[in-house]
Length: 308
Image 1 (cartoon, rainbow, N blue to C red):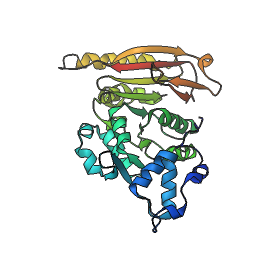
Image 2: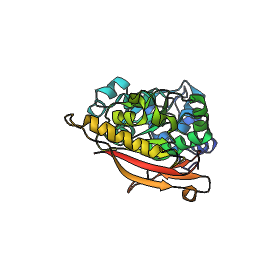
Image 3: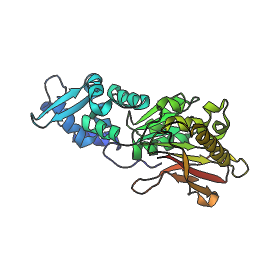
Image 4: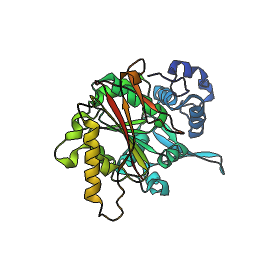
């Protein structure tokens, strides 16, 4: 995992050098909303949050610059929920917006609008005991934020430690110790990543296995990338494909049902791995892939599952 040298992820001690002298601020040391916005553009959200915390209680806010009046206005969570762009979000997406509003960072309204209009990224089967899992989330957040991670057995503290070490901005990754189905039902325009699902493929009852959960979460124009391991002896890929076929048959008569299709299948072995034992997941035309350090035995199979 490489920490990219972007304004929001550089060492905060370097960023502090560009802050105006104290004499330029109001007597109470507080930054006005307009000053906050200007400073955020210069040094990034994370640095501004740290600077504010040193002088007075953290100001949690979503701000909107009004070009007509040349003023900066604060936007509350209730005001966000009333906007048309925020009315049809899934439960997981709503939780992501609420987490950003409640974080110690602050955001421009245009940032949140861009995120809810774009594709959400959902991660499953990342429980947390291995550093490579946190690195995967950090890399994902760097390229596809916001990221929503789910696992009923998630070790949240272990993942948070890695995310903090990698200087991932607060609110960029939402960790949830529950089933991926909590993100929402038939959510359109999302990308789901499930590396090394293992026992999840065979979970009982069937309504809780990986195929059933993907059927619940994936909506129109959504995709899932699933990386299996120990192939062909484990038959993980074959098991998943068989279950998807079964689900499609069971729902074929349902009005408006869109079947789940395996649209891509790549068989991989150790020669496919990078120097650190990593594979690239989710690379497509116009979208960067994300490296995942494989922690299980070969061979592997990377399946892309789509609902159009």
